[in-house]
Image 1: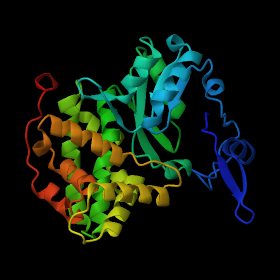
Image 2 (image 1 turned 45 degrees about the vertical axis):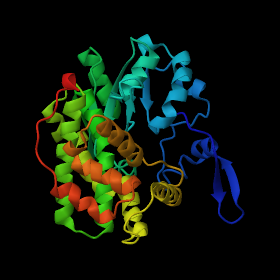
Image 3 (image 1 turned 135 degrees about the vertical axis):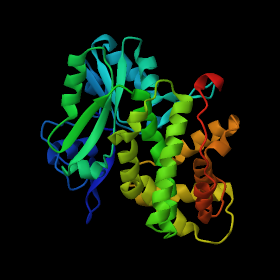
Length: 345
């Protein structure tokens, strides 16, 4: 397991530090990002990316997607893409520099790794701490490696008694859901921070799922409706809107933001998010805020903001300083409409 090397504090009294990889290998615990959970002894932390990936037959990508581009060339140089498969757990989207259209991160990985390399995704209602503590959950493996036996072997890598994995072939739908649900979770945090109650939150989740479905079918080919009823769809949306870091930080944003001033300038909004991230995430990164910015700019460029009133409201509260209570406008003004085919964009 490749680990980004950093110094971590191992003694609160004398501020003694050690390398994170050494702590994981000696104590079998990631004391910074997953404290209190013992890791299997066969999991070895390796600070050298080259050593960790050399001659791998399966690569599992689990990191914030903004760090991926500078790592992929190194990975490509030390594996044989013709004999290796990839599975991404990354929640996010890339955007084409020319067309500005969204691009699946799994496709970005494939493009760098070479034409013979294929990358699927594992997405679902999988809050990390609960998975690590073996609380029963489900997940969705979306892949098609061209062989039923290979697909099943990959599924079996993840599937176990407390972590049940089903397989579908809709990589685009599963992966896009994993990115978009983090945006909706920001809205859920705003609702919680304002103490608007369960009914309002239920309405937000329903409308959020509708907008996620619309976005996926609008911008990606071959998305299947059944995907949204899998763990990677509605279940992941629910758990993220109740227990994820994006909801938690948005809840804090709403509390710190308060009622006054009525509007906050964009720079102050950005600083507030940075402060919350620093105070609450212990070095981890929010994905919902980045996804919200990227999706908003895409929709604005294509005159589609009116098609996505909830995502628009979430962005405007987050980065344009609108009052947090305008989140209800994103719910009230939602209207049903037919998705625009990708070919017409």
